Length: 145
Image 1 (tube, rainbow, N blue to C red):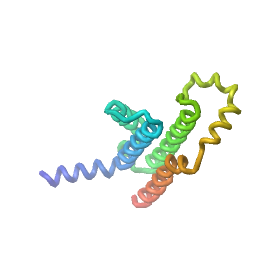
Image 2 (image 1 turned 30 degrees about the vertical axis):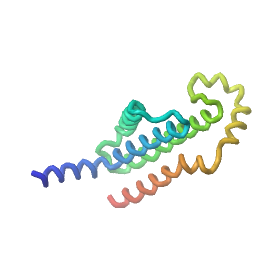
Image 3 (image 1 turned 180 degrees about the vertical axis):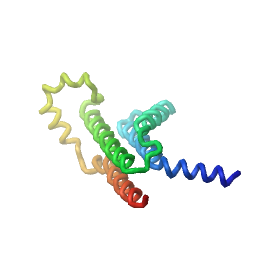
Image 4 (image 1 turned 90 degrees about the vertical axis):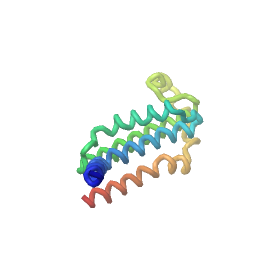
């Protein structure tokens, strides 16, 4: 009985490894931005972050083929870019990026010069190092299959 449960659990983990890694990393990235901008982390933030991560990573359930690895890397890179842009804009104006900010496009030169001062190697490292690690992990895992 225990062996059967252990085998089923191991099969689920192996078939959904990309899904679990993606969810964990997206939750990490979501909580990182909340912590860095000082919004704090409470139970609702954690639950919403997990829910969004689960929804984003749904297409990788039971995919341990090339599609799953490519999807994970592309989506994770896009989410990282969006979160980093949001972090930079929040650091500049204490406001989040949204469609309402489109009317500020006339101030794009001023915003760009202000945001350029905020960009530094430390923040880029914090936000993008895990993208490099997930790419290397994907390559290693895909070659192992």
